[in-house]
Amino acid sequence: MKKITFAIMAFTLAMAMQSSFAQLTGRDAHLTTRDTLPRRDTLSSQKPEYQKQRQDYQHERQRLESERNRLLRERQRIDHDRERLSRQLDSIDRKHGVEKPKKPSFGNRVDSTAKVVGNKGAELGAKAVAGIKDRSLENVKGPKGEKVYVDKYDRRYYIDKEGKRVYLKKPKTKE
Image (cartoon, rainbow, N blue to C red; front, side):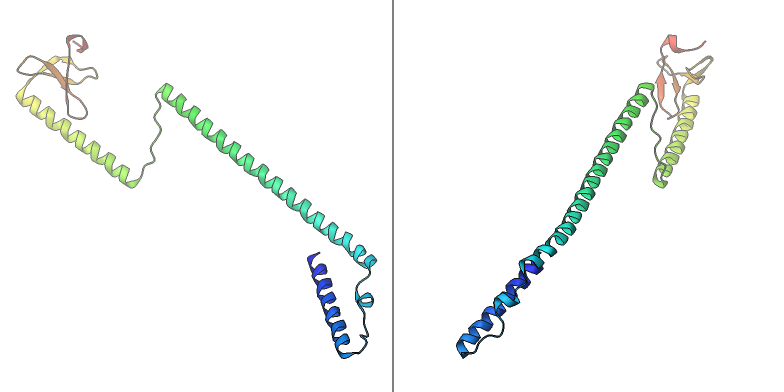
């Protein structure tokens, strides 16, 4: 549409310049604007074709935009559902005491291995010290079957997996 309008304007300007030149020189212009301008019926015959193309383009664009919006809404709904389900699963896990498994990376494996080795060393060292320093009770066991020791203040304790002393009260011992 713009190309046609621009062409008509350019052509009209050229004709105006030609007629001004003819007036200045005193010659008749062999072409007049009436003869050279496209007729109204030829413009109207081209117009519906361009309108049809423009309408087709607009309809296709609207269809694509509505499809895009539909897909964006679908994606937002899926993301919302995923978050909601994740929260529900987390609450169920917390309710039943299930811990999420951590992704093992090299650093995590080194850390966990170091902790296991350190805890085992601490446990063995504490048991060795307790065996030398305090007396052990052969007929009494801890909650998980650990050896129970008595210190110089007659307090009973056992050594846990981390090498720490856990002091016992009388009912917790198995005799």
